[in-house]
Length: 430
Image 1 (cartoon, rainbow, N blue to C red):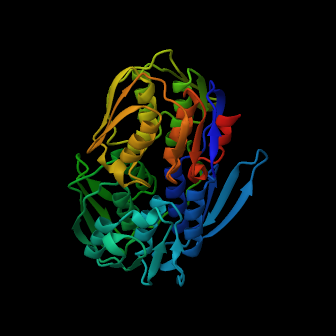
Image 2 (cartoon, one colour):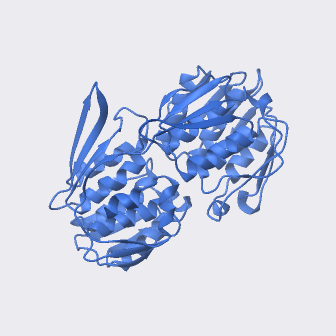
Image 3 (cartoon, rainbow, N blue to C red):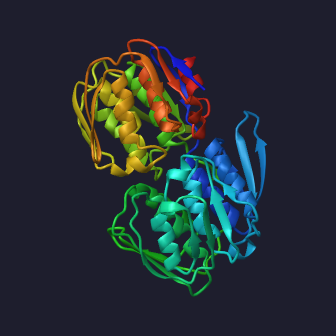
């Protein structure tokens, strides 16, 4: 699908969709829990539905309802731990969801039956070799295609032990942390992490273990974790927090079009690391105002300035923000450096190379670093035709960029935005 975005001022009140990271974690914990969980206002997107389908295939029962405003509620009856895993005959398709692939395959490896995972062409390029090597060290049989890519087959059970695993993506560590408590009683899992990117996502995962009363130890530097087996998960209930990752894109639209975005539902105390994006906006000249009240959800208002300014930003903890940050930098006066984010190259696409190429088509002075981008902005980008590369965050960033461009921008492969933010493109076009 191609979409055409014409330049205009963005001025809207936006209900931010639920967090993908929270939604998928809740689905997996609920699916392995004893009893029934009620997940209110989950992210109803392609990635979340891929996870829901995997959970059902593993044995969880899930029912879907809508409230009077049309917002989803998912009721999940869990399998009560690894012993409740179903026998799985057909490969489980995770679609475009890397989070589902990594987290679910670790949890599926707790059982004694073989489970195979597959996905779309982008997932086929995202290797899990460090995670599979760690699982092998814990007693799991793990087989895969070249470089740890799909199809991936795992067969447990876990026997525990000590493994060392580099984590260019935090999802490898989150996968082991969510699965390890459900290993048999007496199984002790120690994970050493000589490299760990995206630390806030680990803090999010640990918040789920804390809520479940799981016994674990970690050192101050997050380089060693130890988890006791024998736990059982309780149901998880309540409203899923809004997604700071998704909120970045309407905020970006306001910033580059000298507009205004009122973003509803964001919790400034949530564990999501991408809330740091709003500090970045403030440093680049945007007006960022938080409001909260006891009788309504919190919201933040982002107002774009007459002149954005560049800066140097370390995106190691927030690699998903690189596309939006690059777009804002294109409009900012002076040089902007987005650094320490080499792992942005192993997302759905090589987002460093892709953003450099696509912004270059609009006349933006943008060059690659091994671990980031240097953008010399201040010149209004031209219009033209851009390739979304089938990457939801690339599509949304380029669409936001179009609002401040000199003329209309056509983006190919725009349907990818529905992976995490259904309706975003309509929001920009209306």
